[in-house]
Amino acid sequence: MANQSAYRLPFGSTAVGAATSTAEALRLSRDVLDRLAADGRLRIVPLVADQLVM
Image (cartoon, rainbow, N blue to C red; front, side, top):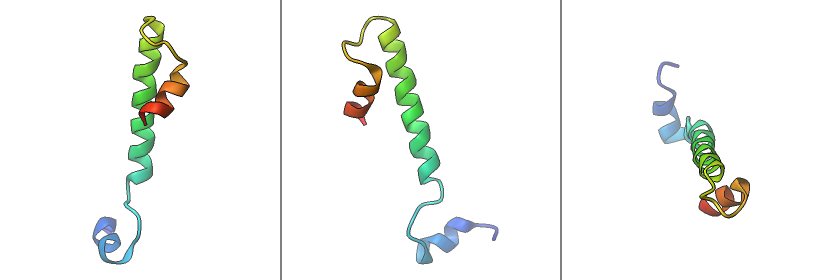
């Protein structure tokens, strides 16, 4: 099928790229928080901060 999104709109229940975009957002958030922690600007563990932000 050339355009899966066109099929999923009327018949599907999930977005095509949702899992990929969510994983990318989590990775970007974690990268920023890791840099903040390395600079000494984060008072809690990056994993906990990431869970609070997301």
